Amino acid sequence: MNDNQLLRYSRHILLPQIDVRGQEKLTQSCVLIIGAGGLGSPAALYLAASGIGKIVICDKDHVDLTNLQRQIIHNTDAIGQPKTASAQKTLHHINPEIEILALQEQVTEQLLLHLLTSADAVVDASDNFATRHAINQACLIHKKPLISGAVVRFDGQVSVFDLRHASSPCYHCLFPVSGEDDDPNCAVLGVFAPLAGIIGCIQAAETIKVLLGIGETLNSRLLLLNGLTMRWRTITLKKDPACEVCSPGAVRKIG
Image 1 (cartoon, rainbow, N blue to C red):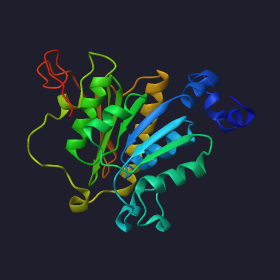
Image 2 (cartoon, helix red, strand yellow; image 1 turned 90 degrees about the vertical axis):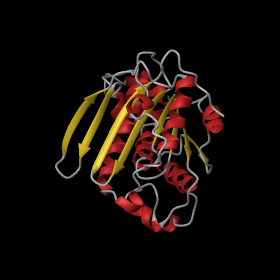
Image 3 (spheres, helix red, strand yellow; image 1 turned 60 degrees about the horizontal axis):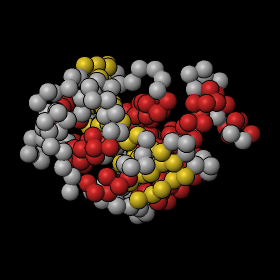
Image 4 (tube, rainbow, N blue to C red; image 1 turned 180 degrees about the vertical axis):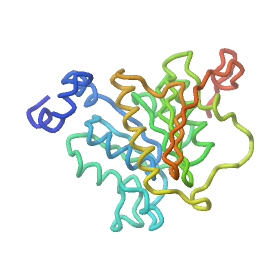
């Protein structure tokens, strides 16, 4: 690490759990973020500031005025721009030393398989079940840790599915595919702006812990937050032995 990096990341380096070696590992890591919205914004901001060497951020949408209430990576001047381009500009202002790859593309199963070959961890900041299940499938195939979050109205949830380990439950164990389009849509139901920041920041923290192998992650735990009461609940997750996706007899197909 050069002198500027030692100074920039000095508060991390002071932590014995991270130290210089851990910070160097972060600078050599690649994180894939799916979604540059309410969750992806704070997650990307803190991962960039923390020195993740390469961040790949994927989102097909453009910045809209209604996004600015919670999607803090964008500003008023970015309205009409691709979200990934807006995010890339903001992240470069925060940390010009890291690489930001902006992909304004629809997330497809084949794209995920390609992107996950070089990713060390995946942050799911998407807003629909179809994408979440596709991300889960790809992470299973590549054995990558998945850091998942969701918010709607005043309710938030976050978990880690560390699919590097065969004993870890997957997203499908928690939310099996129902065959119905029952996605909670914040455009209809609304969302409490600070809640997106809280959950997105937890996703960033869990990502760093996963990359460094420090502390106790949310693997096999679902953390739930009621934003009205500020009460947390933790639910222990177990691998579903009959899971159609991650059980030993499951056939995993993409494309």
